Amino acid sequence: MGTSTDVGRRTILKAAGATAATLGLAATTGCGGDGGTSADGTVTIRYAWWGSEDRAQRINKTIALFEKKYPKIKVKTDFQPYTDFWKKFNTQASGGNPPDVFQNAIGFLRKYDAKNVLLDLGEQVKAGNLAMDGFRAGLEKFGEIDGKLLGVPVGSNSMALVIDKHVYTKAGVKPEPGWTWNDFDAAMKKIRDKAGRAGDSGMYGVMYLYDLYLRQNGKAFFTDSGLGFTEADLKAWWAKAEKSVEDGSYADPKKVAQIKPKSAVAGELAAGEFTWDNFTVRYTSEGKSEYGLAPIPTTDGKKTGQYLGSLMLSASKRTKHPKEVAQFISFMVHDPEVAKIMGYDRGVPATQAQFDAFKPTDEVNKAIAAYETSLVETGVLEPITPHPNGADICESAFLRIAEEMALGKRSVDDAVKQFFTESKTALAG
Image (cartoon, rainbow, N blue to C red; front, side, top):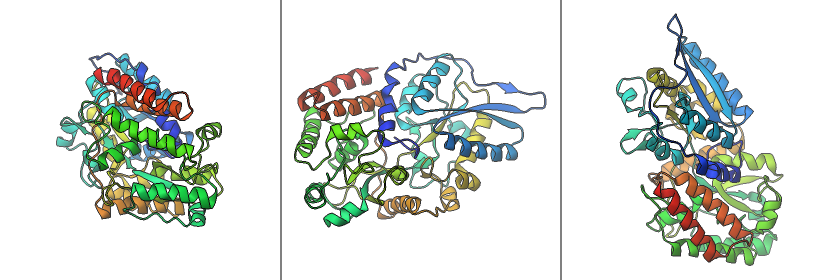
């Protein structure tokens, strides 16, 4: 689950497991972390995250605030691009020396908990070092796995349909809450015929959108132990996508691939695409048009299947400073000044205090805030689907195989068979 404005949807989805298949991390014991305590009682903790230089500059400013409030705690930092982050993290964790606190995502919680890497922060909540009140829309439960608190949300996002407003207006299409997939399909053809552009960039590889579609129909992409859908389900989803490419409702996958990393929407190949709401900033920076957020289509006109996703902060089970790590996490998710510095870089702030503290002035971020507020107020949000150990590898396989199918390298039947074969192996570990 992605949640950074500085990395495009495809980059995140491709990375979120692209190297995970090589993360064969053996369970280790013992203490790691920096372990440093100076003569005057000052403690040093290590904090690592993925992201851009801009995110690093923002985070460093928040750390300065933290160290001012907690002068006996020093924070040593490290950041990498997404793929490099997980390579380095795996090496450190394999050696029993992971960072004390680090950015995390739901697809990795069970994976690293099973490998004895993650600290259960529940004890620090009981001790009063970590506050878990004041979170928005039930986000305090997001990092709870099997009764353990393995991650604390720093921001939230949800799936949305990003649209080119001018193209939608030209075609006379106005998406409304509760519109159905039949309405969506008709809109894609209308955009094609009246605006001369494909309606969508192609949704076949967006795992989290397929999850919503499954949830609308009483299923889910994942259960807590495996896949929650059948080969027949996936065949129907991918066959429909293939047909939509053939009739021009969805963009030509080969052209979409040619303009990467620019999105098909900003590249004027499609009028819209499904992605995380806080990625909207990307389109404004890439394209020349005006972009907005439209609601997720439904099966029954009511249930969207949506939930709030989130980036999280997790702690190492090997840290020698669990109290200080908990205090650091608590500060980062509750302090209003942190929100003013970070903005929506990691999603909409997860706590109400931080949400209220940052008031966006630009239209794009205002739209993101309004979209998430509407999801809460209309009551469509549900608990997130569980992610089993191996989910990150399944996600990577889903994206890669869907792209191979889209580019004509696999038939739908072969793509479905290959995905289930790889997923069975990934989830058996």
